[in-house]
Image (tube, rainbow, N blue to C red):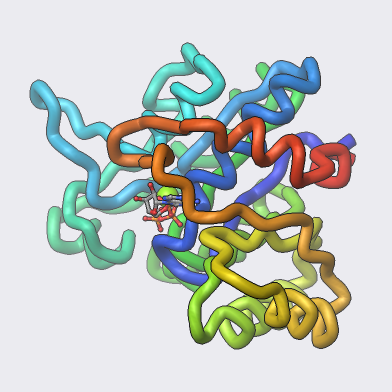
Length: 231
Ligand SMILES: Nc1ncnc2c1ncn2[C@@H]1O[C@H](COP(=O)(O)OP(=O)(O)OP(=O)(O)O)[C@@H](O)[C@H]1O
Ligand SMILES: [Mg+2]
């Protein structure tokens, strides 16, 4: 069995948090002790003098995690910008040692860790490294979150191609916010050797910012064979 999974996106705002949360909750329902991680967050909100990431809060709440915020989300940056730009605007150096340490602690503590990436695979996380380097360092397989819009095929295939060029393992793709028709799903599968694990429609009662899940976990468990992600 894998020790975890890294949920990356074909873009920012495509549903990584919603999908990572559903994976974590589905694995928990499978009987495993699961942990969650959002290594670097930007756009963190200041609440009572502390920076809080809405993504980390959502991921923790959906599995009732009691892990410390510093473990789940060791790097929190306030500007809603790319990590290295947010860091330079606030005179902060992103200390990746903190991330590696926190990941190791979570991996030692739990059976399985679901990590949500930052934007997509080519987002810089310090002067030399990209998100793809973080995936390699954690030695995790990917699930690629993608959203249904004009451009999905291109963004998804580009992400898959880059993952391949970096020798990253890809479990599959989850298409979020599915509208009518699945023609584009067949196109993605035709041009890649990676399966589309399932789809999620727009759901009125799902909102990361308000920390509400609706029936996303039940939908996910019906739609997606979670053992394909675990093994
Ligand atoms: N299936 C869905 N139905 C309804 N709303 C959704 C769905 N999926 C995502 N959303 C909403 O769309 C927005 C983006 O989703 P999400 O935060 O999961 O994306 P992300 O890829 O994690 O974004 P980021 O790059 O900022 O981390 C959020 O407001 C979320 O509540
Ligand atoms: Mg997110």
